[in-house]
Image (cartoon, rainbow, N blue to C red; front, side, top):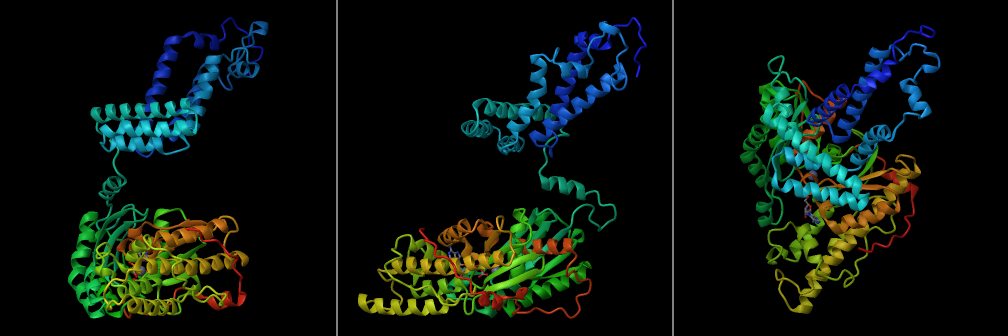
Length: 581
Ligand code: KG4
Ligand code: ZN
């Protein structure tokens, strides 16, 4: 401390305060810095504000240190001594309103810019070249926000968007260096820095191949869940004509398409095969003939490229897909409902599953397909191109679900298993009876088809909802799931049925759970889920094969550890829920 070292110099603080030119330069410098920070692609508006503020504070510190010494010591001037910077703040003498404004405004702006991504979205639009619609969408974001908060904050957000736009324009025009590249462009750029040929510099990249049923699909996905390329060939149209999947036909179609589909996924991803970290392929469960095509093609590719191979369990891939889109931590509950699958499982880790229940006969999608076929919905002008399940959902909107009273299956069994064959037979009988009553031939459309569709959809929804409700209660009772933050993931083709989703939403609301469904294209079979499962396994270091000798496909393969018996023994009574949909 320099206490007592009096001299005749005035307090440098005063001198600094009076040199306006210097302050103006400093303020402009900080403004420019803020604009530069805003234009950095990864920085959101709040981050840019925070950084500006922090750098400004550091600048102030260094500046005062340089002028006054550490920690801003002032030569003792007795009573003539002016207050130090910090004393000014402490005693408030010179803590003027303008100073208050400059101190508080970054904080307000940070809070104002934080609540939504509206501004950022506008900014993204701007930088991606959508110029005309941008100001409208920015205005909308600001207006929306204004309704929620105060008009002042909304204006601030809007202005920030404009600052961003102007700064991006200037910087783009001036240098072209700061143009906001897409995530994909950044990865492509980074990948061009391969240190060793054939080795990926930054990201793990997996090629996923799926042929377990009637879709030939492939995709390239990177470690961050970025889908770099995908391709799919669906056989639905062919199988609709034959009234179901004929395995040799499916096999032939997979053979005809696999090379093209994998090539397409790779070329759209702009990834050369040598850059792949691994190849992941569905090897279980599924149709033997279909699985065989995918596996032998993949093994050839693995051999040719000398890459690791990751065999994938089709259900595991369905269950983990949600993690590509949302930050879902383990453990979570998953319900898989499609044409080939029906199960409830607790996902505790990448390959750590507890099977709580499954269908004892057919899957719900299969049952809906059979009912749709029996009702000849393919001849219905509105449903001719739809899958059975989709046709039922569509027609159900025009029918009365209470017209027929189908009892939900397995009401007495207090477990989480499912059954749909009984329901299908009951509906078969009703249809035959109605055909007689209406005097029409098998193959013609009944006048009550919409009522039947509505009733079967409702009964299916009730059955699925009840079993899921019990699974949630069981997991909570055993502390397998969080009491207040549990997540239920629903996937598979049938998960795209909005009526069934609504029923599940009622269950999750009643049990304080969050319901998550991947978008329809990821609910149904696809290559992305297989590639993502490969990424998950690579990250966890699980099941990565460097030697593929002896690897076989398995048409039947349970998922995880089956504890469905234990679930049944717990015999949890599910409280009645009003499924008002
Ligand atoms: O997952 P997916 O594409 O294939 C597998 O079965 O693995 O699911 C297809 C199944 C079909 O049975 C189809 O009828 C059913 O999902 N589905 C639906 C709907 N869309 C497709 N079921 C009910 N409502 C829908 N909207
Ligand atoms: Zn599937």
